[in-house]
Length: 239
Image (cartoon, rainbow, N blue to C red; front, side, top):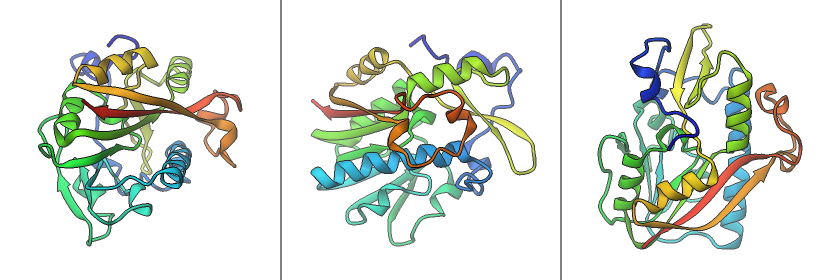
């Protein structure tokens, strides 16, 4: 995968202060502090509204990299929340099963789930994570994988000096700055990554800027036009 470099390209250089989502968990959902996150979350809600209105997923469901789970607004039965951040997991209802797992480092299940959701899954869009997503699914199971659009990632991160390919630049409430993993590929390369782990893409959709009632983040509004995609959405099945 070559289009947007991953974290390994910068780790050895020492030029970035690379952090983790654990460090921003308690402020991540503050729309005033992080309007870009809020806009992407609003767009992701549209994805779920459409999916659940036309054909609500059934069976055992995993929300991977859940953060404050958006999926739990749509389903609570047979739902498992998975995240590498204990502070993110702690923001969810105590009545939902939770697993503290970094999916890039180890498996979280074996052939357990009918559905796996990755909502804003760019922090772990890697071959190892995809292998673990595939392993967690039953044969014939489905994965919905949502990331910021490649058009936005490529345009924004190439136009702002402080940005770096493969990372999201966060300015925290205390004005300190860190870079968090965020890997977004063009469609053909994302397809190839998915297919490398015995899965196939059954559908590809996008959410467009015009579909949101409001865009709060200048990181989006100054880069994308109304007809530009804000999210890329991959529907995949395990073969």
